Amino acid sequence: MAKDLFNRYIWLVDTIYSSRGGITFEEINEKWMRSSLTKGDPLVKKTFHNQRKEIEDLFDINIECNKSTYR
Image (cartoon, rainbow, N blue to C red; front, side, top):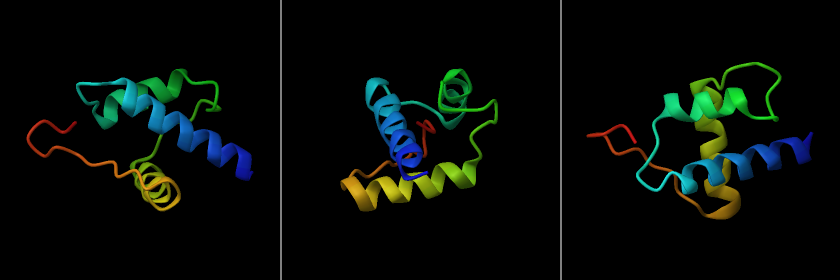
């Protein structure tokens, strides 16, 4: 279970980082649905925010949203 969560965190950081111009939650969710880490379930916003907070705690990476572009 811990390995699965860690892989999800790495996937999320990599997905956001590789989208240099920013990425919306909807775009993240589209990529998530095509990921091998999902079992066909969409990424729920609450789960995303929980993972975002864990990423900040574990890796000191702050994932923020630009309110003017939602990226």
